[in-house]
Structures are given as structure tokens and as C-alpha cells.
Amino acid sequence: MRKFCEVADVFKFKEAHDYKTGFEKGEVFERLDPRIVYPFGKTIISIAFPYYFYENDKSRIYFSKYCQSIDYHIIVKKYLDKICFFLKENFNCEAISEVDNNKLLERHIAYLSGLGFIGKNNMLITKEYGSFVFLGEVITSLELEENVKIEGGCGECSRCEDACPTKSLNDYDCSICLSNLTQAKCVDEKWHKFFKNRLWGCDICQDVCPFNKDIPIGVLSEFLPLNHLAYVNIDEIKNLSNSVFKEKYRISACGWRGKKYLIRNLNINLLCLK
Picture (cartoon, one colour):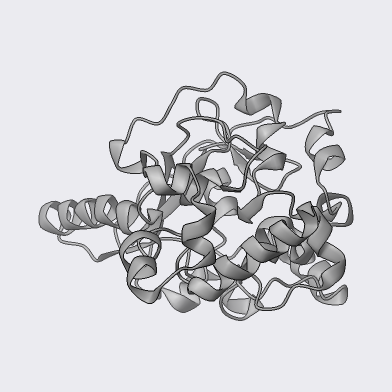
């Protein structure tokens, strides 16, 4: 485990242009040096969990693929904690798990770990499952050898940049990424027209990526889409009660903001369709 000096300029650029999403945890110095947050750590183990099962029908209101199952944080954490238990029991070391809501540079760490490369869509792209993967980490005091990084890239391909509705990839401004906008507390009216049936999230930069063509379906049944998330009941969400939200939507990765954001996004879509 070391300091990631090689990406410091990225943070300087984002700060200079105020390109922030509000979802990035911690201070820059903590993100660049994981040893500050995890002083016991010697190694970060990065693991990719494939979740692709099928294409969305974008002619109707839909949830992004990543939030059509039970919340991936819960599923991934379960697997990572098993690894932590194994390491502690067999190597007498410290080990903790992290999924998404942390100060780690997850995609960069996954790249350094040899899981794939970072594409022009800012996603980690793996050889077998493309970018449809969730990332999780185990930070441990056990010293392990670093994997060889995978060399690769997008070359001259610009399909994701061309397809991005808000052109966030062209401007390197993740704050106007549609996935971020659907989760934001406030959405400027000028962005409403771009929602186009997106109830939560946006898969467009992944859907058009050649590396995501003909990838195998996910191997973990826990990520199978739930019927009410794969096929949206507009009337149910329009009149969403607290009890139904808690039972059917809170369990997904789209539920953390609360029901009013699902209703808001639905209304944005319905108004724009008129």
C-alpha cells in the first residue's frame, strides 16, 4: 500500500474547475494516501463482482442495471467479510472490507491490481465482464505481492463520449453525469429534458462500449433483477407509500435517498414526455 502521487493532478484539475459530485468521501490528501485512513494496512485486495444480466428496455421508464437487485453494498460486503474472516483466521492479520462508501480510489486501485483498465467513460473495464462490475476492497496488514497491471485502452473509440447526453465525458465534469443528476438533491430544470425514461442512474456510456458487447451474464444469483425494479410500475411509484417504499425499494441501491427522489424523477420524466 502506497501513496498515489500519479493521480494528484486529476484532483487538482477537478478542484480548479469545481467538478464535484458530493459523493466523494474525505479530503484529497486522504484519498491519495490510504495509509492515513488505514494505518495498519500493507495491502489492498481489489475484487470485481460482475452483475450484468440483460439489457434495459429504454422505451419505457427504467432503473439502471446496477440498482435492479438487492443493494449491491450488502451483497458485496457479505463476500468480502468472508475473505476478511479467512485472512484473520489463517494468517493472524488485520483485515477490513470496504464497498463504495469510502475514501479509497477504488477504480485506480482496481487498475493497479490488474483487474482491468480505466476507459474513456471513467469506468474500470475488465477483460471478461466489461465495465458491468461492482468493486470491493479488503485492506489487510498481510503483505502480498502487487499484481501486474493490464495494459489496454480505448484507442480511437469515442462512442461513450459521443453518446453521453450531457457531454459530461467531454468536459470531464462528473457532476453533470446523468447518473449523478438522478441522485442529486437539486436538479436544474435545464437537465430535465435529458432524463428520457431514466428513473435512476444512466447506463448509456456502458451500453455503447464495445468492451461490453457479448459479455457473459453475471455468475452471482444475488444480482438477479427483482421484478418490480426490472419492470417499473409507474402508478405504484407515483403514489408511493412509506410502507411500500421500505418493503420494495429501500432494499435496492436506489433507495438510500428516500422515496421523494424516485417520485421526483418520475415526475420529471412524465412532464418531459408530454
